[in-house]
Image (cartoon, rainbow, N blue to C red):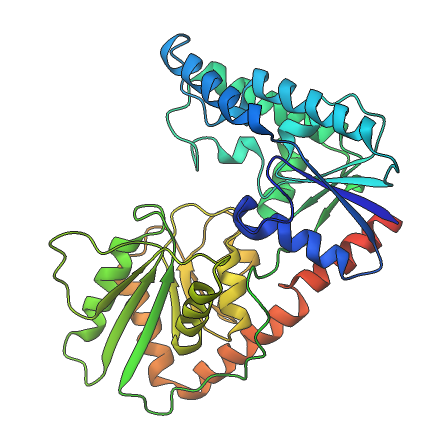
Length: 375
């Protein structure tokens, strides 16, 4: 079987789609699959996409989510992919397009596209995307509809996305499969964790958006945990710089750590290794690959039950997924429970590692994808 991975950015670059596309490519390349790649962007596309976004904003007065969710953008990428597929010396059995609705929607190539989104436009609008005008939203939804219709196969990473394709887009579900994403970090063979009466408990949050990732709730959680406690709780935040005049104690900011940089990757790995809990009170999350990373390290996770999170954090098993109306107090209560019940903590850590090995890794992803395509 031969598969071509298609992306706007280089599919082999760990910066493309936060490393998800490159891990898909590597997983396929390490299995019994002949893999090719197509990169759509070139020197011209950078200027063209900026020009189109400027035109929508200042001339059409339309608030768009991004270039890819416009009709101009989708038709542009459709023409680009047709041209590059036509240039291929050897055609593939399938053409995998991670997050590629705009690539597939208006493409005319007579090939089998695999659409691999983390969510549908219907789910993303008024969830990730905000203040999008009705006209732009309808166009974005139409692009997704065309991609779903034109794709020969569709793979999604969560029940949340799977149900949307069935209910919002009324799709024939025989061509759809739920296959979880893996961790976008080098494999670490973790043993189940134990707290062993630790005096210092380390909490880790990894995210680059203060509001969406719920940093305020995490800060309040660590404040509550340290109130009248015999233990010290320290929160480390990776992905954000320390704000000016920030004075809260027991909080460390590490800034953005680039996984493409070997030194910075090692720093990130060290933060995962020393963390006792992974906390991310996220308000919107399509999948949350950081949860797969936390599971690989055997770290119990406390988060909100939103979007596709429940596929990556199993409530009461690998951590806790709290209701959206829960406050920092409930986050603190769950952490205190696991600190107090050491056997329970160890079992949750063990469950997380087992779930990572069974479901949340790219080797399983590539195997399940190959089986789905063969069947």
